[in-house]
Length: 312
Image (cartoon, rainbow, N blue to C red; front, side, top):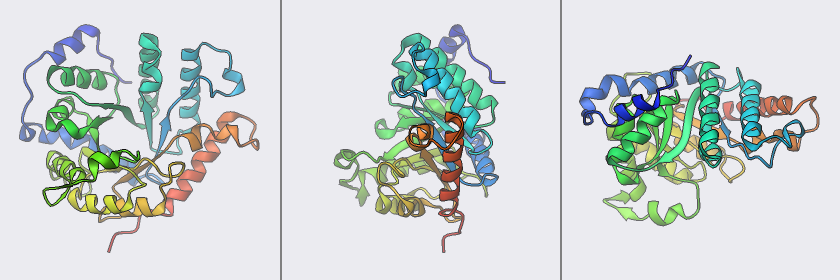
């Protein structure tokens, strides 16, 4: 079972002594990456189901409920439907935070259930701050029990180190799939691009994990950007890549293959709407959770045909 910190413990942790250096944290920061590598190695495909619950897009049995109750019950239903089918879930914190403190409490319960069910759990919060604010965010993220958190890397390592200090794995936004990201991430910079400069920071912070493991500092790289993914893989050879944009946003097999590491792995491919809302277009199953389970199985099969072959 996961252990939640009390409010007093969170404040004490965030107000504690300064950050240790990367060498001091080396044995800790490889933990999340080692765990992820082991889990993916025993899975049919390196996939991740994104939990992005929206109150007005609920199955009939959840319609009319209080919004917070609806999104929590929906999320728990998704977890049960994909349990044993996928290794990882990514939980979008904004979908819960918009509902205030009761929504945050529901988020914590969903994360707790996810971890207890054996999923590698990513808190998709995209935090981006420095100093004491970053420490507060880091302690709060760690207190949920999630193993990973997404971060905005464009404030530099000051916005990342506090999360490593808490023993979390991090996925740093490097090359995102949204169109306007090109304006900031693609300009030339120091012989590469701004994105590759951030990628270099990710590689440095992740260090050199033992053979067979992944770094605990990963990168968010859009599956819609295969050329960038290929270049960034050279910059970050040991980092796990989280590849949003596959499917609905236009990313395909080329974007996934471009991000593979030398062993033919090192990627995590998320899908949200195509799985968690499969019941909207699939009337062939007895329940909405059966539709979700079937969609997850199809996604696993699809991605399994793309990954796994060592890169020549």
